[in-house]
Every structure is written in structure tokens, then in C-alpha cells.
Length: 194
Image (cartoon, rainbow, N blue to C red; front, side):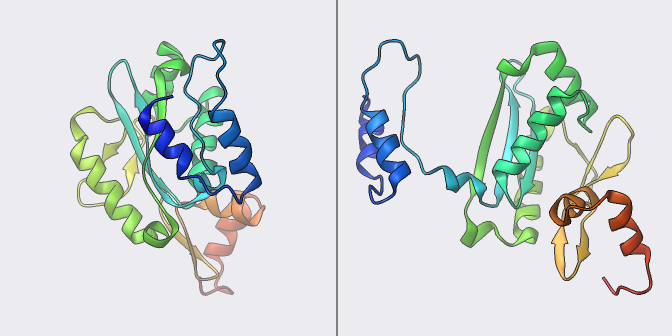
């Protein structure tokens, strides 16, 4: 086990049953395993933050922000495998290179800092600016939104429903477990202020 893995192993909160299990797994010496098992607390990935999907062959990236990183990355994975991702170039490369060359990377995460969507959008924009020469995102200058190459339309227009901010109508429909058309109707109705 590397020194870093040992350090991480010693830092685990062993009062959590899952940590005990992962801690014991990390100390397992199994020559059939081709990866280093480092303990972690799985719930950490259900936090807000900034992420990237990186093509390890071309180093091209897709940068995004989410209120729940695990759910958002899962959505990307499912859409890419179903060949229904809204970013045409990312979808094309996923099919061309295969999923094994893509890494899902968490750039920033944590409830205390990243719960504020405005902070996440600003950070997302900074990462987009930093990697702008090699991005799947197309930066719409002066805005924090991205544009899909496929349709050349703005995606993820933030909306507010019941004083709760969502990145898109789709996200709100998933959250409330209703159809997109229901959310859209609600937004267009004069009965509801937001």
C-alpha cells in the first residue's frame, strides 16, 4: 500500500459501518486486483460541486456544475450510453473512442462552499475559461451557460420554482417527478409567481 493510501486509510472515520468495510478492503492484499483500493465515504459524492468529463486521448473536457455530483455524472453516463447526450461533439467522441478513455473528475465539492448555485456557476465559468482551447462546452461569451453544438441553442437556462433554483426545466421535472411540459406550463402560468 502506498504512503498516501496508508494515510487515507488512517484518516477514515471508523465509526461508520461502510468506512469499516472499506477500510478492511483497502488493507486486502489481492494480486488479482489491478487497482488500489482507497477507503472513502460514498455519500460524499452526493454533494454539490464542479466536475469535468475528460477525454484522456484528446485531453478535451466537458465542464459542468451540479447540486448533486453523483446524480449529474450518472445522468451524463446514461445519456452518453443511450446516444442521447445534448453535447453532439462529446457524444461523437464517446462513440468514437469508447467510454474507457473518458474520466469523470470532480474538480470541487462540498456542501458548505458549493451549495450556492451562483458560486458554482462562477467557478464553472472560470474552469471553462481556463480550458477554453480544448472544450466540449461552447462558451457563450458574457454568460455562464453553455451552448450545444448540435442545435446551437442555449442549454441549462436556470429557472426558479417555489423559490428553488434549478439549472434547467429538465432538472426541475426530475426533482418534482413530473413531465417537462408540466414544469413549462407552470412557468408560463400567471397563477404562479415563480
